[in-house]
Image (tube, rainbow, N blue to C red; front, side):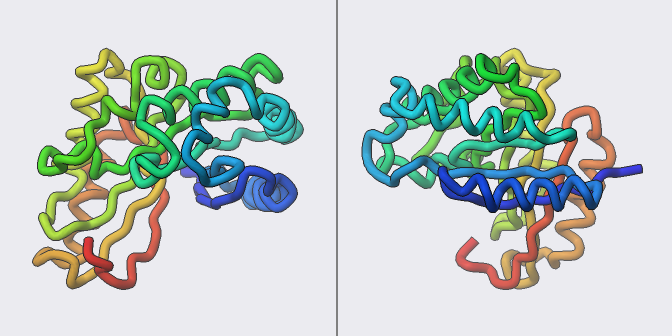
Length: 230
């Protein structure tokens, strides 16, 4: 049958709490999808990670995942577009993400690790004039990642997965990654966000997933209780 997935969020040195929650998820037959932040929130931190300043911590993290008996989806710095320019540039994020992937691969062969970035789907929207996916999902990152994560919430446009996730899939196709699976790390809908009801938005979106299981492997639903300007 289908396997449940559970998203949780951590700081860089939060391995004890992370370990407890991963084990709890595994015991409940859930697939953990964890996100962790950089060690400090300051300009240049992505550069430092990419240059090897935190390799010892990364190796310890790799051993942390290797101790489990089941997989964990692992994301460094989800939605990096929200951290530009505070932490650096999009390419600097991609370099840091690749460094973490490569150091963990060298340490443990990425045992139990499903390596996945998460880019906000808004980055792929043609009306977004501030961001382009090529700033974050560089070729080196795309070549390495096992799963390509995105966050997709209902917005005022009423566009569902039919338009929005399909657009990301088309972009991956254009980058030469037509077999790259997509994971939806956060998604949700609420009445009052657009003119479409939340039920209608979700039904149409989920219907698209059901028809495209060859591209979407994981969906994590979050309750969206208020529009929050989306």
